[in-house]
Length: 207
Image (cartoon, rainbow, N blue to C red):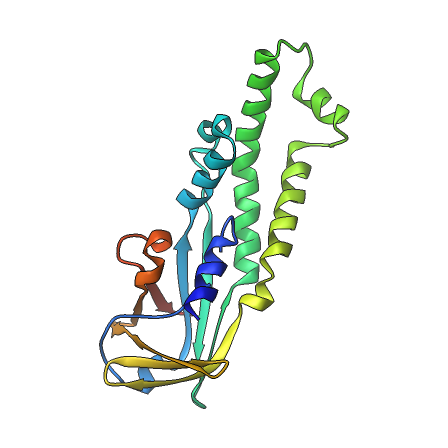
């Protein structure tokens, strides 16, 4: 399950998942829908820099967040998945941000290459109508390659002795957790590189 979470986070240029913490075992407190926002902006910017260092400075303000939805049912089942609608909205916002950076990059490139043409003319020669169209195509490919349906996790759960016992595809895992004031915290050491030093995913009750 942890490998799936790492996969989900990384496939967004990135974006797969599990759980952790310590706290109450009250099933009633777990029931319902939860949301977790993961900021992967730094990961995206680093991937751009790793791919082409000359692009890095043009996307310093680029931001991207991924929302995970987690639901616990009365029948002891749970589901976790990336919120597709929220991700598409986040991608759309990132396209708007990236467009300015791409425009500046192409303008500097034309000057550097001593080419007497506009960015629009350069794009036309490449068969591209606009920077926005170029980015839309790239994001559509990224969403398709993420295969969000394969990232979705479904299974059963039980709260025992300060741990969530999660069972997915006949694989059982005990996950420590904290639940306080409507905040569910899952600490995942294996994902520290992606989530930060603590490796924590923090969920809030939806709605």
